[in-house]
Structure formats: structure tokens, C-alpha cells
Image (cartoon, rainbow, N blue to C red; front, side):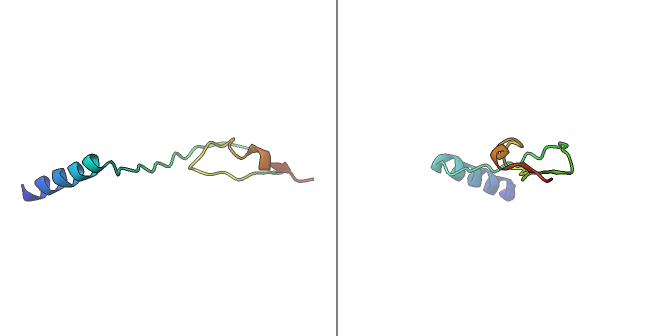
Length: 57
């Protein structure tokens, strides 16, 4: 019971002080040509770096 009370108190400290910073990775699946060079990240949309994509000759 002490452990549960400790976790409730820790949660209250976070909520009262507004320090919750959630970090969420949302991996997605996709497909592209073998000649298309692109940078993908689980942290942002797969089209976020579209300006940096290029095709190898």
C-alpha cells in the first residue's frame, strides 16, 4: 500500500508543477523506389523532409 501511495504522490507532483513532457514516437510503414533517397524519422511525418528527397541517376 505504501508503494501505491508513493506513486500517487509522484503523479500529483508532476501534475501540480506542470512538468509533464510526453515524448511519443509514432513509427509508420511506407514504401519508395530504391533510387529515391530520403530521410525518415519516427518522430515526424514521413513528408516533413520532402524538400531534401532526391533521385539517384
